[in-house]
Image (tube, rainbow, N blue to C red; front, side):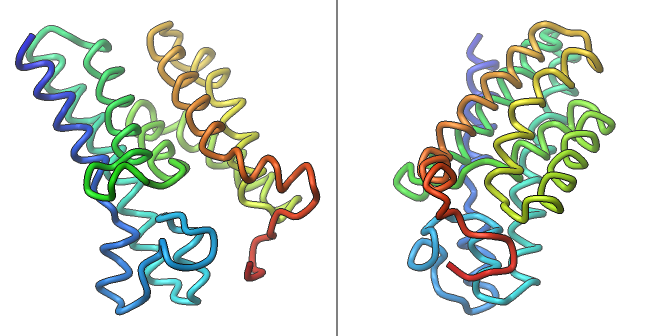
Amino acid sequence: MIITVALIFSAYLLGSIPFAVIASWLFKLPDPRSYGSGNPGATNVLRTGKKAAAVVTLLGDAGKGWVAIIAARYLGNILGLGDELVAGGAIAVFLGHLFPVFLAFKGGKGVATSAGILLGLDPWLGILVIFTWIIIAAVSRISSLSALLSALVAPLYTHFLLEKEILTVTIAILSMLLILKHRSNIANLIAGKEGRIGKSS
């Protein structure tokens, strides 16, 4: 029990690593919380025009989700916990990104981290959700709309591809949290004020 709690807490700390802030520091950019949407994520970092910093942020945020799942699966098999530890690790690393202890619990919206989690669970699952995001983004040119619609279908994809109830429920929880984190974007979408990809806001 103590080991399980320690592993899940470690996943939370991993999720709390603010790659947007780290990348901005490395590339000598302003703190991403000080401009644009104020969100410490790749999309907001891209507003600086420094694509390399945005890529580092994207890979870092996705990478921590992927690492958490791979580690949880490996340790879960050793400890005999299996999908239970994977589910706990997924939720913990995601919560770490949304509410990071290192940023006073004010984190990103979880799009990249959720993609990393899905890729860790099953590469085809991750690819399918990412492809869905790309198609919607190509048509709408709205990043938040792509994220929201991809989050809605992710639990369905998980159900049909993995056929494991605990993982389907886990992804449904993550999708719900991601949608809640996009409340302001939803309001802007309804009002027709949401920014489009490639345009500053």
